[in-house]
Image 1: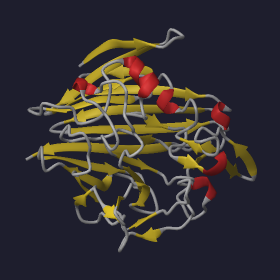
Image 2 (image 1 turned 45 degrees about the vertical axis):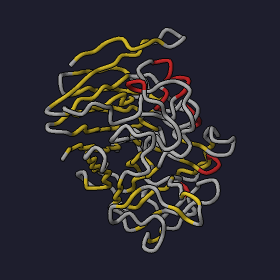
Image 3 (image 1 turned 90 degrees about the horizontal axis):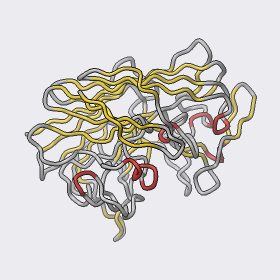
Image 4 (image 1 turned 60 degrees about the vertical axis):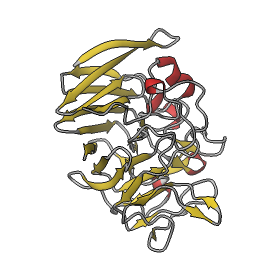
Length: 338
């Protein structure tokens, strides 16, 4: 394990990088956004995630690469919700219309406190004050990344509040298992029988619909590249693994590269996993890890979380946390080769 100064924000805040590892897996974590900056597997000559070697590139060019999204990940329609009859308006950072990933200065853009570290783990903490981005209540988050032999990076998160509020975290790493320009030929499997349809602004309608017979049926492994009506189908949707959280991580998704032979298995306590194929990445103007260039679909995300726009749909698992309660999430990313 090593820790080093990785960069400095204009206000003088220092950003540190901590390297952890166990067995065949190693990872680099930075205190900006609780970002997973890099993941490597022994004997593999390329990174398995999208990231940057320079800190200022995260500030200027990141598409939430490796970040922890919160206080409420994903979208809240019109940035409006109610708790106990009280109406709240949070920031509208997506096209001036909706709330996305906690707002303009969400958890993925905050400087986290380095609490503790060891050769195999790092613990970070964040305080979100009452009123930040419009959310009620002060929230305290503790987050731990753990490397487990032979090939797992596990995230454990807890959150408490002093007033009823929303907490919904999502680890937003983009995966590319063979360093190809895009992940469209990767094979994906998602352990979900249904998904949550959205409107044209990608806000859930409140329905839960079976994947059978649709473009969203990943119950058996298949290439991410799918053509419909002569156009490539784009994926940015929440899949319903269950209607409630679990006490222990359960299988959510699997990603495999035929080119490299590497497989990623995602397991989580969360009820949903948002699959995003990276179609909005666009051409990143600076080099990524190892000088790789990132463009459309350079990586894909499996964001374990509660459902998008949850507070506005009574049939969705609740994202409301109250004083005396503890928000918990465990999500594990396990890599193997062969």
